[in-house]
Image (cartoon, rainbow over all chains, first blue to last red; front, side, top):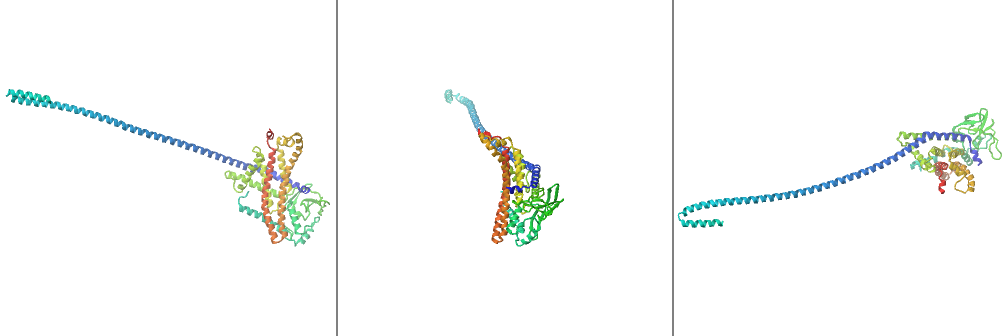
Amino acid sequence: MEKLINQFEFGLFFWQILIFVGLIFLLKKFAWKPILDAVNEREQGIKDALLSAENARQEMENLQADNQRILNEARAERDAMLKEAREMKEKMIADSKNEAQAQGQKMIEQAKAAIESEKNAAMAELKSQVSTLSLSIAEKLLKEELSNKESQTKLVEKMLGDVKLN
Amino acid sequence: MVISNKPLRFILAAFVACLPLMSFSNSEKDSAHVQTETAHEAASEGHHAEPTDVKSKIKAFIGHHVLDSHDFTLTQDDETGKYYGFPLPVIIWDNGLQIFSSSKFNHGHAVAESNGNYYVINHHDGKIYKTDAAGTITEDEKTGHPTNVRPLDFSITKTVLSIFVAALLMFWLFTSLAKSYAKNGGIASGAGRFFEPLVVFIRDEVAIPNIGEKHYKKYMSYLLTIFFFVLFLNIFGLTPLGINATGNLTITFSLAILTFLITNLTANKNYWGHIFWMPGVPKPMRIILAPIELLGVFIKPFSLMIRLYANIFAGHIVLMSIIGLMFIFKSWIGSSLSFGLSFALSILEILVAFLQAYIFTMLSALYFGSAVEEHHHEEAHH
């Protein structure tokens, strides 16, 4: 113990305290403060960067979700439109088919009516022709038959009976 | 742990292990020329005779190495009595300031004169004593210590020089690290890349866990300075320059007393409350605990002082003894064995250098932490 105490040297103690305390204050001002500030600043920067990266990722995810949603909506809309178009097409086809059918029916009716009227007209014509013809025949026969009274009468009767049969 | 590059670590360790051999090889090599040495020694009266055999010479060399010295001797040649190194200024307060070069002492062989006062360096403790023109030293019969007057010695000794160099080196290193942030966009460059993680380590692993987020900032400067100061001086001690600053009791004492002062001057009410009137224990116990706690206040920095001193001091003694063994064995097997041993031990000493710096800082932080601890002890009891 005495040996240890003897080792104590006041001059050395003085210089050591002087140099060391001076060093603490000098380093505090010129080294530790700027170093620790820089390290803190950098750590804060890294933290902020990580946070903003996380935010960006979140935003990206949101954006992607949005895109997906919009895409799905568009797809649904397209499907709806296609369906509608198909329905419309079918409806149009059905409509036109019905219309054509109705038109055809109408035309057929008209044709039938025309044929009927034509036939009636032809029949009337025929009747008039036949009557004219029969008149002329009758005239000729009368002319001939009138020469023979009896036969004339018979003939007229017969002929009239024939016309009725028609 | 600290040097990631393995080959670099190996080279560093090899360098540290090998280099001391060179500086010691000269001083211890010749036992044959002891006679010339003693003849030379006769010149310095009042001294004990210099050790004559290799063993005691090594012992004396180690003994001198761990002490402070007034000149910076790298190595010496016993044969010619020549010293390689440089003298340092001697500053003595003895009825006025006496300043002269330590070369006047001629490495303890001569009496130095300054303004009519005579001084001599005692061979045993390496300290300056006041004497007369003949250099007479009177010694205490029992202890063998000189009884001459010791003037106040403010000399720039080897240790003062080495702490000054360490301080300059630290100042240069860390200011350039601080500047490199501005230049390099917030990222350290150069040697700072090695030191920045240590700074961050002290903050995150030493200061914040021990002191707490709230108070740690005001202690950071002290903790960082003391860590690197002790670390640098420990590493300096492993170089072949023969510096032994952190193995010097005065240095560790001054570091410990700063920790002691900071702890007690920044302490809050809660800290003193725990010492003098321990909460949560019966009243008679409080009276018994108070002196024990008060003693602890002094024991804590005392243990800091002794721990660092003893670790570094013992490391130096053991390492140098093993190196000295090489010159005692003087055989092929024994010398190479002790070389291997000293090599392994040097690597261990590098670890110790970091470890002791860490422990000193860690315990200082722990004491600061207890000084500013918030009042939450009471709540734990309810």
